[in-house]
Amino acid sequence: AAEVGQARFEELIAADSRVEPRDWMPDPYRKTLVRQVSQHAHSEIIGMQPEGNWITRAPSLKRKAILMAKVQDEAGHGLYLYSAAETLGTSRDEMLDQLYTGRAKYSSIFNYPARTWADVGAIGWLVDGAAITNQVPLCRASYGPYGRAMVRVCKEESFHQRQGWEILYSLSHGTDAQHRMAQEAVDRFYGPALQMFGPPDSDSPNSNQSMAWNIKRFSNDELRQRFVDMIVPQADALGLTLPDPHLTWNEERGHYDFGDLDWDEFFSVLKGNGPLSRQRLEHYRNARDDGAWVREAATAYARRGQQDQSA
Ligand code: FAQ
Image (cartoon, rainbow, N blue to C red; front, side, top):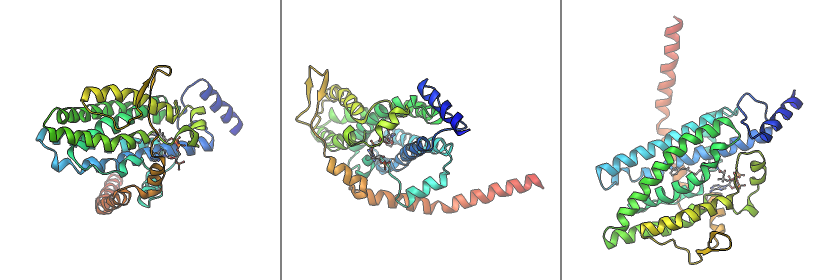
């Protein structure tokens, strides 16, 4: 049966079709997906924190309503993604436990603080912008539930990026102090946002296999380049500068060249030594502990409903 399954799986991949939960799939394919999809889910959940911190301090009622909607969307994305990962046979409790105990990875970017209101704008423009660039190709990922989740997520991410852009545009065209605040936010988030695409291709152990399986469609460096090419004219339109003296148009390549990123810092963040790594995890743990009674009550209530029905 495994041989038939293997042949069918290879056919599906060769035809660029979709693998569905009930299809036979090789164990390493399943593992790689659980790894990527659960890390992605954890990123959405931890990613609520930097902006969540600004909900009570948003500068107007309108900004506050928009930011609340965005942070709620992120919770929703996390939930779709946990559901998609569950179809691969790993329970949600197990994934949440991995996050709780600090064994799970989540995106490096969320270990940086959102210090000012302009940072909320930079997160929307750069972090959500990088997220969309990475996720649009994932809409075609070979694993059905992941690809379909990405379609909906990307629609919401486009709104997120627009709201970030709009915050930065207002600040950039405001007072000198506001302009400076916007520029400083971009200075802080540019490098870490570029690192969201993952290590350089030469240092990316999972890329080749994930591309062969049609999970990833482009390499980390290809998507990073696409993102840089996209944000250079956008920064111009914002009236802000990207903090990289090596950023120049390369006529021959038809792309912008850009300077090396600080990969030592990236790998150190991955090891749990980011500026707020410890606080992010602690905040998650506290929230989970504080919500234990709600989960217990909901479980007891559901059980009682079942008993009433069977009585
Ligand atoms: N941070 O071999 P590769 C969002 C790890 S967007 C932390 O290249 P792969 C929206 C990688 O896991 C952010 N770890 O790995 C939002 C691997 O470790 P492992 C989430 C990273 O998987 C916006 C090792 O390094 N998006 O949340 C990072 O082929 C605003 C070697 O790397 C996704 O997760 C990193 N930046 O490529 C929410 C997208 N980069 O597992 C709130 C889906 C790499 O072997 C507010 N994921 N690592 O121990 C992907 O596309 C891929 O997994 C990559 C990494 C491209 C991230």
